[in-house]
Image: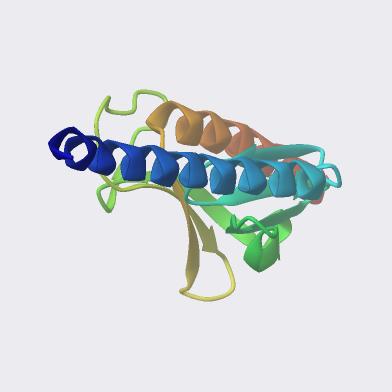
Length: 144
């Protein structure tokens, strides 16, 4: 009886971990189906992000598919910058550690911005570099 009581918490924890793993697998599968429509996409536990042509769509992953989806055009973005702990950092030399990692899109027409959360600094930095290059090429096309 005593041994059974000792093993019961471990058994409960095992089933809880299996349930959490199943939920995460469902999120990834829902993301995979959603991401097929984009040229470039990313998934992490905080957000999903997809780019098709000049449009960026982002939202929150769930087992049934992304929710709270927002779409904006890169043509309306004035600047894309990397924020670590709510402070802008050099995207070419980001810090190794940080708690809150976000890619911020600042729009030219108003004082508002969109912040897309990331779990990893290198992933956020690569997306930021790519989108900055895309913004530069769009500006060159507009000026010609």
